[in-house]
Length: 199
Image 1 (cartoon, rainbow, N blue to C red):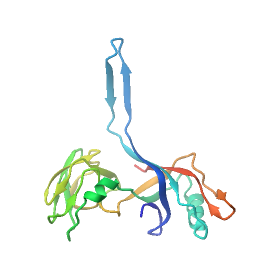
Image 2: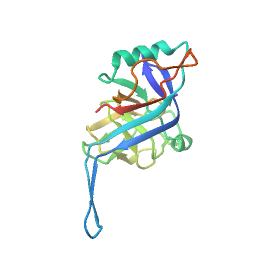
Image 3: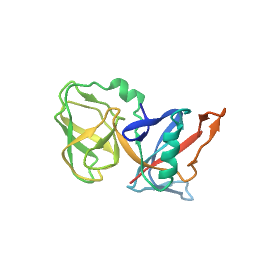
Image 4: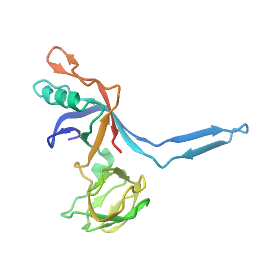
């Protein structure tokens, strides 16, 4: 279940329509010959734009969280996994670990008992830092796997979450309502909210 966390529980579920966007600064200019010159920065953050399930009896939890955290404090969410990656995932009784150096676009997966398969497009988070990454290749058992963006911190036999337990620290976008919006008198429905990864 993907949504906004408070006290370790999801208090507001994400609903469709939902967009997960990778924001990487890119500068593009066109020459007179119409040749395009593109420069990409290494900075990257995930951004979620989503509707939230309307709430009634539980609306006080979300209302309190948004008012006290506002646009200035961290809010944790469960990162939505790609449906195709979920369907191709094969789980075995193992806790995989990763080893890689800072700045690397690949890392080595260990302690990954076959047939444990983690497909490309899966979001992961290492236990030693808060950045959320996406796998760019599929790994079964112990092998090297691609990752995006490049590793922000080194990992040495570090466990990582990759199922429906990848939490991402976020900020509310500044135009998101930090109070109550009610529909039909008893249903709190904030419409579309935007959450940006806290870096």
